[in-house]
Length: 180
Image (cartoon, rainbow, N blue to C red):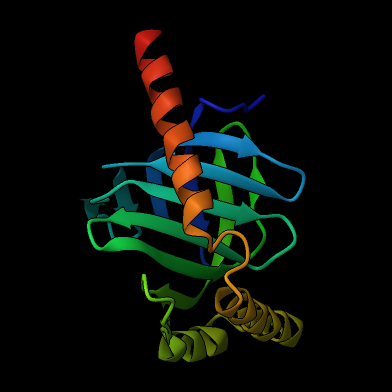
């Protein structure tokens, strides 16, 4: 049974069920009824093409059970930056947090300006992988809901909330390191 302080992986897949990306180590901060909050820092990421890289800064990530997006809050020197993946609601098991990545991304800057990315990739993949029309309707609806949430600075787009979770992460990390 997963609980705060436990480490777990994040697995993203594409619609065709192929692996897209794996984050090797992330810490669970909160398991709520409708969402999950995790954190990582300098974690190794494995791409589907076999390449690896490391995240550069602390990140607080929010996964939702009833929304088709997840949010990565990156704590950079220039402020909190957000990167949102349009993807299926998550599934959590003993192995990993799992979701299907549906190509579209939204990048949000500290001044709350944002940009939708990868529309061409979405168009190509929706044809090649034959996204059902129902899925495409949900994606468009959820992208609009995400944009509304960004504009109104609703959870999780609240800097203080992100920083509170970061403090919780540092405390849990210190506690788990003491127990190692």
